[in-house]
Image 1 (cartoon, rainbow, N blue to C red):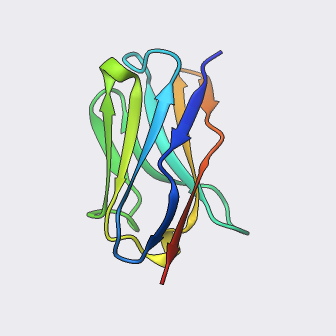
Image 2 (spheres, one colour; image 1 turned 60 degrees about the vertical axis):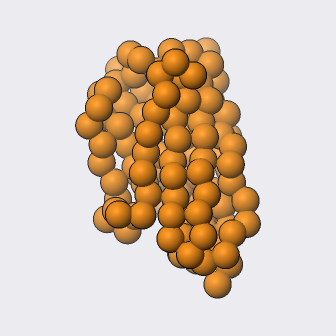
Length: 115
């Protein structure tokens, strides 16, 4: 069983930055995809950023130019650097890793952006 632990969330003012981390108990080297998702109260969980395979990245339009996904294979950790944060970025952020048909989720970390 692969376990994921997110950290780095918190309260920040609009315009500020946070870096989320997702520590994976297994190797991320062979992951088919790694995602950051978020879910705001009363809304569906949406993809924010992703690695497809080792190296291709994709972002939701709402975060392009502000968020950056990165990875450290040696530490089995995925990061989400979030800059120029807006109140609408407030949500619980979840890490998700997939190895083919197997999918694993973290417990989430709360990000709150005050105006």
